[in-house]
Image 1 (tube, rainbow, N blue to C red):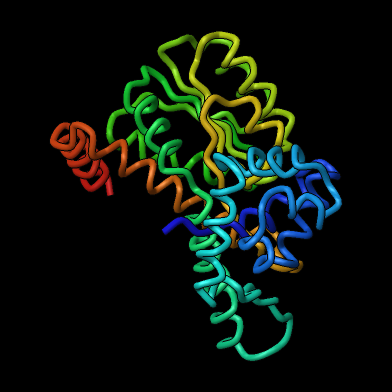
Image 2 (cartoon, rainbow, N blue to C red):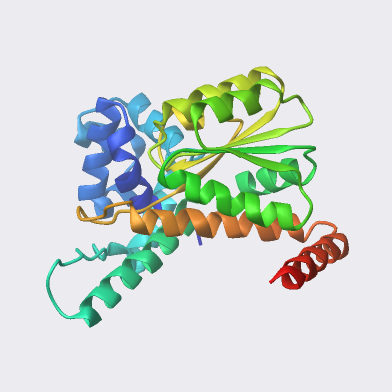
Length: 282
């Protein structure tokens, strides 16, 4: 059953246009009413146009208002989805509370991401990456850690993979890409200028482009052909966006296994070769 309508709205709301924000806020505050109403009625109740409701659905990557209603209805049937269940991490208190709250938020972030992650976009990403001659992964700051994790995984199964962790590295890689290559931009905010510019340059040169960002309209996603989204509604004390990083790493694991299972026997042989090489050096 499709779920994640309320999570999608809450995650994307800050990136929406003002009128779409107004509509989204009304829907979040009145979900039961929305699932039993027409698009015309919801528009009137939210004091926006019907076109705004349709644009909102498109901003969430839904096919239309009916899909949004179905997802919200599924959320309402699952009481756990209705809980504001991210926990504030306390500065003081027993270590057991710290362990519980951080672990809970990480698990919740993965669950929320699964409700907004498109299987269709995942399939596209896996397909183009598995066929790529070269893969360039762009990430800055915390996103650089995600980029390096993906590079390490793909290198183990013999993909030519490079990371660009700063503007000079990223633009150098992007400038030398062509239609046989893939550029992968990672930015949770979706606002990282270096990643935006590098993806745009890679696309100009014919490379396929993929983004991994938080859900919602953002410049990094706009610069990519394929969009992968994560969701995290963790609370204010979240230095380094801890739960969102775990959600991104989970998507990276999905991509890696999806690529590895294509021509599985060949990739297992490469993995075993690299495992033996590393073991012999340790």
